[in-house]
Length: 112
Image (cartoon, rainbow, N blue to C red; front, side, top):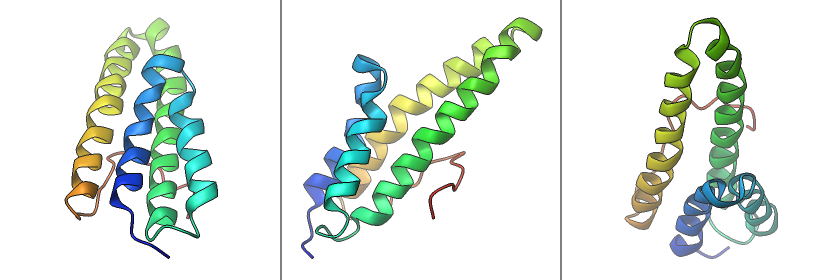
């Protein structure tokens, strides 16, 4: 296995493709994780972390949609999810590049 911080960093940043394509922020990290998890040191853990974060954001978004109609709070929740979806991939990419361990808040641990 080789150490490749740049690929790990790009995997975290690839989540931002959601802003352009809608689904690319899930598919690109999934493909990178599936193809590189046995070749790059730490890719398995980072890939699972990223996918858990993406799945969690999707679940929270689905929950927030009915709350728009019921209380109007869903709009605030969706804005918060949008901010989190932009800020934390960037912060974690910087952490990975510096050799630190990244973390995602409110991430449901689905893939273990």
